[in-house]
Structures are given as C-alpha cells and as structure tokens.
Image (cartoon, rainbow, N blue to C red; front, side, top):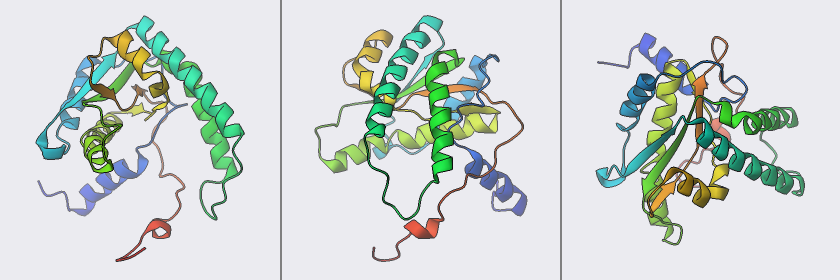
Length: 220
C-alpha cells in the first residue's frame, strides 16, 4: 500500500497531529472492549525495539480494587508534584506554553488525578531490565525499546475513538504498584495510561511552539 497519496497523507497527518494526552474528555461511563485493547497491542508491538529484543510487557488493569489502589498512589504523587511545582520560580524561557495554556493543563491534570480509578482500563507498559545505574547509552537504548511501542499504542487507540494519557507520576510508588500487580523482580514500569473512549467528535492540533525554534542544522 502506498501511503504517499494526498488523501492518505491527510489522514495520517491528522492522526499524528491530534493524538495527545486526553484527560477531561475520557468517557468513564463507557466500557472498553477487551478485543479493542488486544488489537491495539498487536499493532503496538510492531514498533521498533533495540536489537529486536522485544522485551516489553503490558499489564492491563480492569479490576476495580486494583484501579482504586493505583489511583490512590497516583493522587498522592500528583499532590506532592504540585507542592514541589509551587516552590519553583517562574520559567525564564522566552517561548513556551502561555500561562493560560498551563492553567488548563493543571486543571485537566488535577481532574485526571481525582478520577484515575474511574478509567475503564489502566495500561502499564513495562520492560525487562533495570538501567537506572547504567551508562546513559544503555538507558537510552532501554527506553528507546519500549517508548515507540507505547506511542504506537496511543495512536492505535486514537484511530479507534479511544483516548489515553501518558502519565508517569505513579512511578514514585513503583515498588508498591509492582507488589500490588505481582510484577517480577527486574521489570521496570515506564508509564501509566488511563484508557477510555473519548467524548466529542474530534481533536484539533495543539498550539505548539514552531519546530524551527528547536531545529539545528549541522550544529547547535
């Protein structure tokens, strides 16, 4: 199949420019079918993996009690994060998100923290091996072997009318969550995705700082 046709490129570009972390528009009242999650995961594992190791794992949580426990850890970590952010001086960059944008992000993030257990599905992408104390090159290789698959998962979900939010704050309590879910030693959690169908018709591209502000040709 040749994707490089105007119609195909329009669809692909729209998918890529409108897939983002969904928080307030997650429809917690609508069940998510297991078959949809399984199909999206089958697509996700087509992503590249370092040396084709494919050492990824995806823990799918639908049990209400376990979702409540994970949501509680996330809420505690989010509260600590907000306290830490409050003590920081204002950003000194000449460009970036506006105060209004950041206000909306804070509000939607708080909403998600308050309602995380209500998501029909929580997905925890994991990878075999711990690299925290290893050289940077090994860390980059390790996370580069799972993050593309997680992004592919979010794209596949988006194409089917589901939203997800890429979150990591629960990792403050990674050991507790690992014990809750029975994860073996040596398995590293890398994210927590609340997944649900989204409300409304569509998303529009975000207001981003232009790419040329961050692009460097041949030298910085």
